[in-house]
Length: 143
Image (tube, rainbow, N blue to C red):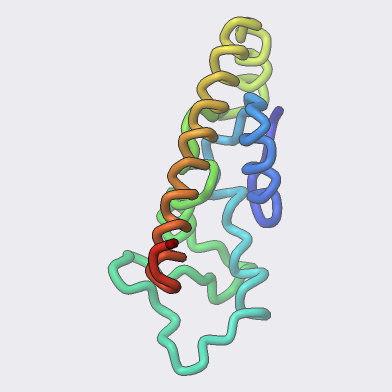
């Protein structure tokens, strides 16, 4: 699967990943994951909270989505979901993608799929522990 991961497709990324479908995403994710400025100013209300990101080099929102701040886009793209998940492959251009698709063997795809499946199982176990702990801190340990 080839995924240009931005916007709502981040949700699709997790769905496909949990199905252990090997996928390729663009190396230059900042170009595809930088649509935040188009969405957030219309929908985010800070209500007296500063619009900065303490501890980060750049604030998370783009003031004008018509003028891309490349440094800001590069910085924030490192936090994109497609950067956080292991076992995703990336491509630098369409010819690079086509070459990788041609060169990748069925065995490599099966191995990648198994690694993705193992990571998903681990993530589910960790999430169960987290939510059990969070619930226990609110309602106390189960009797």
